[in-house]
Length: 540
Image (cartoon, rainbow, N blue to C red; front, side, top):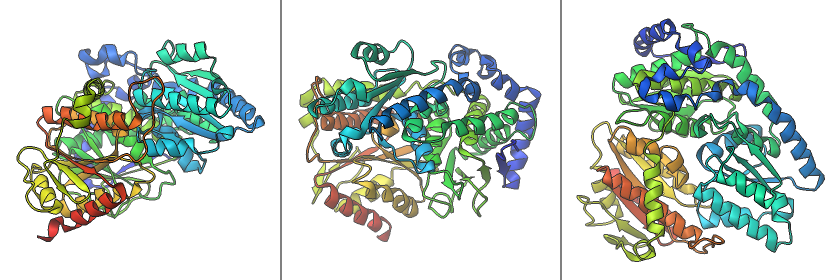
């Protein structure tokens, strides 16, 4: 237990017995202390060069301290000008941590990690006179974030507001975005530690700046992480990170390559969504890895009835089905799970700091954007059922109604495989799509994930291509009622969103995975129709 009360308990006796020798080996090899000391040799010679520039996250509880004063000063400055609405434009590691931090504290933050025109339009409809946008991108070239920046800059200008005074940038030193911000005279530029990968960046400027500007107590987060760090770097069998990483690896070796995450009363809001990227992108490669499955709660399908292919993990107190529990305050949990994931990477014999398969979907999307004819009219539906156009993979029957198509598609899942539901929709206005996860999991018995596109491309997208190749993929796209132009770019948000869905589907098919795309010509009616069809799947 860390001084702040952070604990990991392996509840299942069988799993504890299998994890124990792994913990002992990790202690003997001094893995925890070497990791805390940023030793890049822990993952083998092939990973050493990457690890050598990706380990600064282990000391962020110290190195991020100077940010606290800078954030508070800017926040007070903005408040003095009547600017108290914070919009965050960021993807993956640039958005998931700030959303968890602010949601947990009940602090309002508008997060744009989407290319859906409706969701972006809703953010634009807020009071621009009170708005500052944080443009957050490690590389400085993230297409979604750059599109948001362009759209908001134009909106500020059209509202008679000096756009540069309302744009705050978080990026790595020397990135194209850092150069642009300097040239454009943006309000403030926070340069993050370049030796931290995006999914390990919760306690860098990427996590702290937007959350702090929104009003979250980021100093407390660093205090919590500092207290936990004392134990996480110890070579002891009581080290919670060693226990958690070893338990995941032991379960994986026993055939449980999925990790089902449920909040059981932790007091933290949305933690499984953050952990999902950390685990999937870090471990899902070379045909192996841990697939995180974020579920609605401890009674949800997939958790309460988890089979031999999955390990239920409670974020919070112990509940009946959980095999592992982890408790502690948010800042400590960030650091604990980062340590545990890096340790699991060593045990799985992979590099937890690269993401070799993420770029493929981005490249496919860019190719489609460069070929408008292929994007707009190249693919014809296999069949149409009322408000749903069906684009079925080879071997899936399109005879009958939508429920029949779904049955045929779901039958392609291998034993012990998984189903990924990918909704390229508005996660606010089309929020009801999220019920598809539990409904499908309940009816199929498959471990089922749900991701909003394109944000999952910066998260579980790596695992889909690089991890265990036993997934099947249900894409849900929707008609755009009112599109948004991206200033000085030859595409709209709607076309970008469509290209991202088609591009990812193309790459998944190249990996031999079945992809069924359902396009809703009327989103509200189509979602209702799709839910009804899912509910009929197990009735015949």
